[in-house]
Image (cartoon, rainbow, N blue to C red; front, top):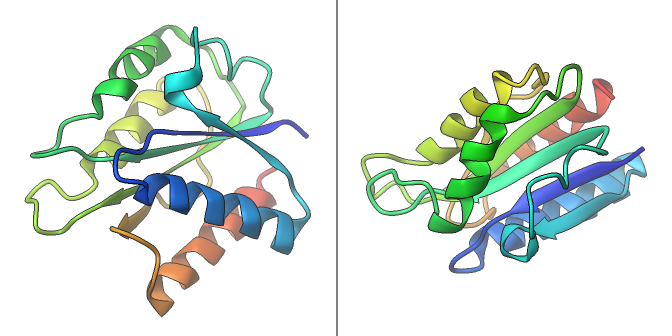
Length: 148
């Protein structure tokens, strides 16, 4: 199974979350995920051959998409991912009024491609460090894996 996790990270929090998710998918489900850093991608065809994928983003400032994710976000409008499984995870800070809104924006954009999200969007404040965070991570992994 070809599962990809595409991430953007400015401070390292979203990369840490991505690494944690990859580790837990392998540990709990025996699934390997390919990690892709959005800034290393030369075009936006990297998900075309994926059976399933996860987008990991952060929310910048007052609810803006990360600059490095803007072109990818727009390119999703032209994609047909009919029947592919996807999930969206992200980090944010509740000091901002628009907490983790980019997670929801990506979810809405990807849903238009025909892909199926079997999970609740995973939103982590800064970094995963509470029992609730780890429970939510486990639930995400369980729901995502069950849909494969």
